[in-house]
Length: 386
Image (cartoon, rainbow, N blue to C red):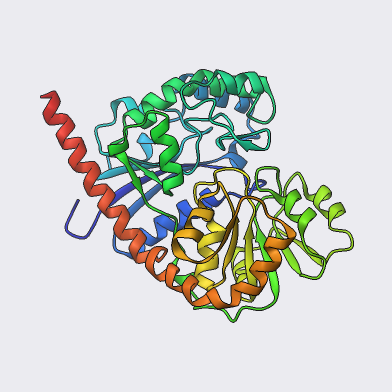
């Protein structure tokens, strides 16, 4: 580290824009936050949308997933005087072999459960699934990635080396919540490496607490794991809900919404969604999987808008700990109605939770502390090998 701050290399394989990803959003936001704080960030990225049309792309990505042999980011930040390499996502556009000879301190943010689960969600058959925490064969048997054994096979074959290269060689592993941390500990990851650093809301998105209102907001992908069908099924006819997002269950959700005051607004810019959240009675977070964080939760807190969250998502744990809404096992009509009456009294607590946990300066401070820990751990490892 030089006198003006950290020199960090971010490495991220961007998911397709066709499947809007909170990971992509948060990687870009974290890089900008570090830069605004005076640190140098070299973001080395490979974008699926730019690569997927190339001849042989699928075969190259599958081979890289299995063996770890594949594109390396090293040439793009080397020989830059990097203090720390911070990996966010390598799948499917980067190899892992370069990690085996990396001399720099390595930090990895675990945005999901990919090293433990082919689907990256620990979710199967409508419930949390931990069958692959100690081995990946159950995921292959059930075809957990995209519902296909063929598509799951590369992930299954590569999972052992993925855990060795990514989890084993990292000096520090960032997780987004205690919920996520617990699953990685159960999978045998060295808990001394794990540090909880939640997502955040950038300063330029903080418009202060909103006035609230009577409408509700759902923001997220429309798929089975997110619980959209159950939400629409149980939504009370007398309440208004705006659904932001797209996904494979959009047509099903529209059909179920007939006769209810539900508007489907599609995928809109983040600023438009946060504007609606400021004027909402509540945000509903019906995820059925152990979602490690849920960006919609932090965005609700900055607006002072309470959240109705379903267990086992981490947002439900935040709600209980921070007094920012209601946590339930099932999102029912009665639960929604009860929350509708309660939520106006919780707006001050929600804004306080944002100030305490999800501000940009606090996130930057947490990252730089992790970088210090990673450097110390790498020095200790070298001393032990000397």
